Every structure is written in structure tokens, then in C-alpha cells.
Length: 297
Image (cartoon, rainbow, N blue to C red; front, side, top):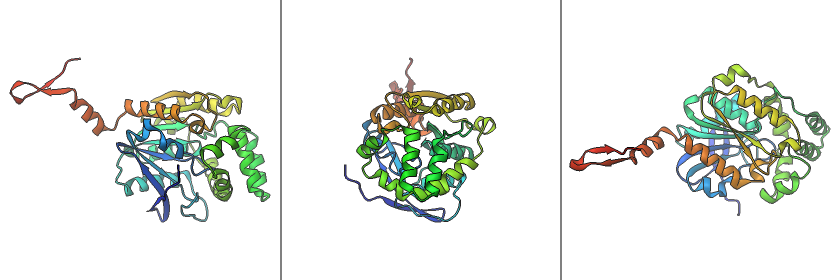
């Protein structure tokens, strides 16, 4: 599938690249760190693209989106997402975040709860469970000027040694783009994740339905994602678990159909109010005399 020209939107003083696929209830996909194209494979999945309006964008500092000097906090990232939604005329959406961007989705739900109908949180970077030793090793390589080595060390640590083949097969050129964006990830994003505060008190305020997603094979790479998954389920008031078969932290790159089906089922269980009203209307039929009768179940 050839890459198409992305559109651009002025957002909070910076331009962000984005694309929209499909029609229906809006679903905003916030990509994880390292690779800007994480969610591209999901746009080709009929379970989602055939029923939802999918919005995928490149966060500040990634790929062709604008870059800024200095810190970019998780709160800033959430504000960028909300501003893009406004630009697209989206008042409320299902919001999907992966790894560090799941933190951004949670922050969006805290800051503008009315904008978030539901949350899909794909192995979020909750540092209540610390990152493994690969983190400091990758940062040391980055500071030494070895950006490619830093990206490789990080990806091996979170996704396992076979990540490179999956990444290149599903998102061609992603590694090279990740190296080009290394200053954003190591210089801005990781410090923002480390300084972000999210614990039981904050989690109690996130009342939207939340799908906590875990890769079934992540435990064979690192124990942190299983531990964070249990924490998320314990903290969030309305969380449900979804374990994606055959996947590590690469998740939808390894099992896109399974991820699409899981997300679509979750969104269908928690429709936007307008969609829920429409579904209710289909259960009513006009009775004789032009009146409306409610069908008994």
C-alpha cells in the first residue's frame, strides 16, 4: 500500500501531519514513541476502517510534523490531540494510545473528559513499574551520539530481538525514520514520561470505559507490561482486560486483525451517545395510526 500525502493542521503553534480513513464514529490513534507510523497497519483493517472514522497523526517532532525546542510535556501532547480533534470538527471520540501515548490518552481524559468517549490503552508506560535495564543503556548510547544503537537497544528491550523484521515488513522504513526522530524520543518524550505524575488518585478520575490491552507474548520479553497491566486494572474504575494473542509490545504489527477486532468490539459496546440513540431508534417501529411502538425483547 503506497503511502499517501498526509494533510497538515496548525495545532497549538505547530503543524501536525494527519490522515483520516473510513467513516463512522471517530477513533483517534495516538502513536507510540520511536516510530511515527505505528498505527498505519490498522487503517487497512476492515473491522475498523469499514465502520469508524480513523484519525492517525504524527505527533510533534515526528516524521514531517513540526518540531519545537525545549520540553514537550504529556499535558502538551494531550492538548495537541484535543486541538487536532477540534480542527477536524470532532467533539468526542474513542481514543487509542500505545505505550507512552497511552499516557497522553489518559491525560486527555483527565483534562477534557467530555472529549473522550472511551480509552484503549495499549501497554501504557506507567513508571510506577520502572523500565528495565534497557532504558539506561539506550539513553547512554543516545548521549554518546549513537542514535541507531540507542533505537535498537530500546526496541530490543521492549519488543524483543525479532522486532526489526516485523517493523520493516509492516512499516517499511520505520527504523530509519526512528533514527531521524531520535532527538524527539530520547530528548523530549522520555523526560516527559519520567516527569508525568499518574497514580491511584488520578486514575480514579478517569471514569470512561477503558480497554487495557496486553500482548500475550510480552512477558517473554520483559515482565514490566504484565505488571503495569495489573496495575491499570486495579486503578481504573471502568477498565476491562484484553490480551492480544501472538503479540509482544509490537501488538498490532504482529496481529492487526486481532487488535482491530478487539477494538471494534470494545467501541461497539461503548458507542457515542448519538450512535446509541440511533441504535435505540432501530428497535422502535411505527404502530397503526402512525404512532411509535417499542418492540419488546
